Length: 117
Picture 1 (spheres, rainbow, N blue to C red):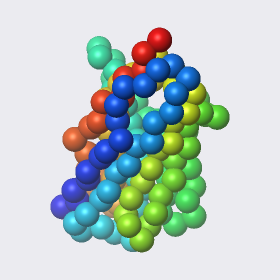
Picture 2 (cartoon, rainbow, N blue to C red):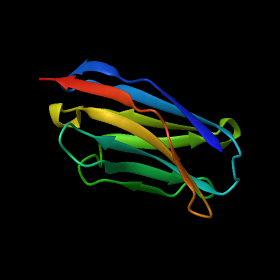
Picture 3 (tube, rainbow, N blue to C red):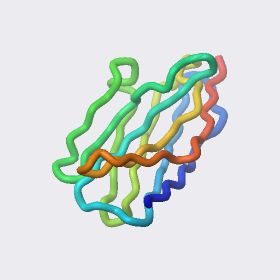
Picture 4 (cartoon, rainbow, N blue to C red):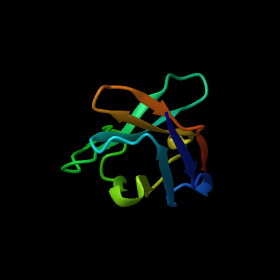
């Protein structure tokens, strides 16, 4: 089992910034992918960004490229999402996901991000 604890959500005005953190604990595999997904009301959960543990390869949704940056600290099993130039359409519950090399995946409890116009 893997436990994920997210933090850093909140209310911010359009154009502002927030930084999300997600700490993983438990049965952590050295090779894994961590990432952020989000779900707005009435919409499906969608990928925001992911990052691998090895080479730190990243993947971003087109809607956040150039504004969001994902990073990780492998020693702390923690992944971060720096969100800049936030827009009202970024409003959603943001979920952290951990996936190991066998494609077992775990989700955090979610953290609310609200961007006011």
